[in-house]
Length: 280
Image (tube, rainbow, N blue to C red; front, side, top):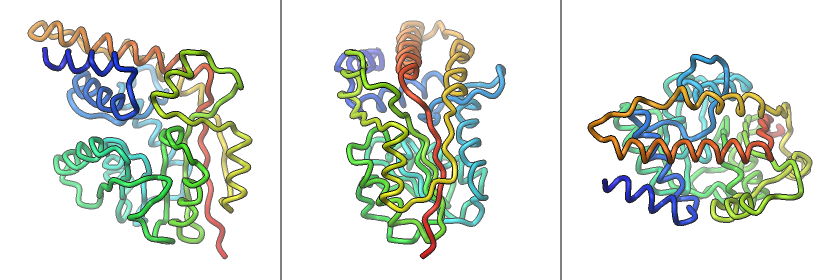
């Protein structure tokens, strides 16, 4: 019952960004018998599980880049580290460094790293807008999947990508973009509590030019993301009668979260950008 109280408390406070991810980690672990990636699902097949649909998004994003094998990779906004570990195991970089500002996420990431016995991944608490722990021109590939909309100063974030990349190094950003000037009251309240800062497509391209990052691809994958969420009922596990009320509470939280995300996606665009740093 303590889990229910904690979940309800988090859900009723207006949810700061850190509280949201604390509750999501808790709920997803309970619903899937282990921590999962924290980003949206990407539709490929009706039969895909939730974790497979999440992996679909990672796989698709990585497919847009040159092979990661034997490269130095940084994932900015790594969350609980599950995606960084997945990339390390499946795409064989020399090393991947996962960075997140949320200390609770990094704590989970360290435990997941130990559980996976994966030596080529490390996790650091750091700020995407001021990467104090990443030397200049030390990285072959920068990944940022579904995190940049939290950054108040995205221009500084892009400048940091430019700084840490080696000449010719690649980057990938998957972000939620604003598509309309007017936002509903509920969207504004949610955005404020979650520290959401959306750019539109034109603003991104303007800032890429200013920071001398060359864009090679800009793709709207919103349809795949929305269709991915349409499968969520298939992902709900059967209720264990031994902990009936706790499971009901988590199902309610999960379904409400899905419906919130589907609602917000109607007013947003899920865009993937790839590019590189110019060779001097």
